[in-house]
Length: 484
Image 1 (cartoon, one colour):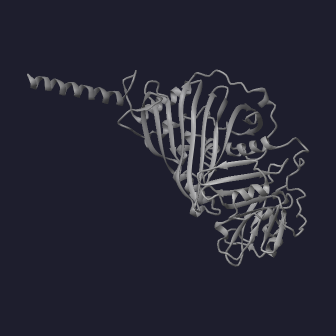
Image 2 (cartoon, rainbow, N blue to C red):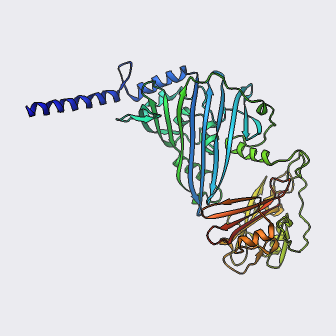
Image 3 (tube, one colour):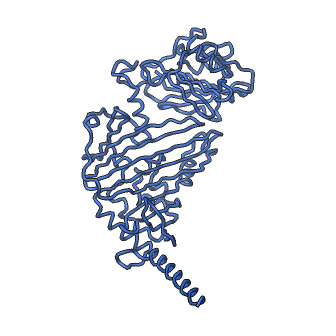
């Protein structure tokens, strides 16, 4: 009797296991076996029939270069109406460097026009518009149209997963770069990831990818792309200072599909329609930077600039030879030499420092903005921001020095004495800095570093910032810049 009951339990357990296996390997409603080929074919057909998408898009990158920890994050909710090719995005993009975090809340509307798309980008009540060849941050109508051709690179997991409380099939594989740009438009990848991605450049790449598909609807549930190796290879190919020391611990993009066919129309608000035109970089990261400029810019004629390029007519300041008492005197004393920003390369060389050609070759040309390390005979270094004195590219020796950064770490060799206005130096206390410069316009308090910042009224660029060790309260780095 006991053996019969035991046999029944075994049979029941076996039946339950069989049901689980059947559930995992057959597509509901059609009796068709769940294979990568069948799933992707049905999913592509269902996506084509869908009229709208609501999804969340995340990007996360963590890396280290030269001992500095750097992080980038994006978290955005997107609505897209496929036939109208309109989209609405809200979210946040942030950048962290050595414990300091700067974030931007974004709202973006995209609508089609004859020459591409008009993209309306807003921060708070401030809006700007630009023209793009693709829909910024939004999936295009044919995003998954070619996915069925990539079935051979995917493997079906033996277990169902859960996305948004729904059972999902899981496909994993190392897809090629050409497959990735079939799956997601390369403009979208570049725009959101912050990488410069070109289809030809990544054709040979192998990129880990996980695609989860809702079991009931056979529609995309979640797409996860590991871009760590891709980012490393692109950074190495691009070269530049620090590229060889770059260590990437994390770099991924994740798209989670939340709703289908729930949006009928997207309406752009009036304040966005009336926004001014943006210039320059039209990626999401670039637009975010331009938006910050719009937020802080003053009306025409009130911000110290006109409609011409900000470097037009930039000239060296009169070198008065006396250290000022306040940061906005833009003076720095290096040993016995007092500099007033902006100054020439020759002025800094007269203070005993010369360009470190290991970082910037002597024949380098500066087209817009550059930076160079200057070192003295003892190996101490300071960082200088460079601008050409006009619209044309200039050699390093012809550029003006518009900003100086001095850190405790880079001047620890000794034999150099650097004072900022009011006698402030690395090693000064935070109290001494505030006593000399007044209450800061902005204070960031981090776990490792506190940052005090002062801004020149009517200027987005000019100002001073001081890094203070959060534990000791002593100054570790000072930045002073006069860019206009």
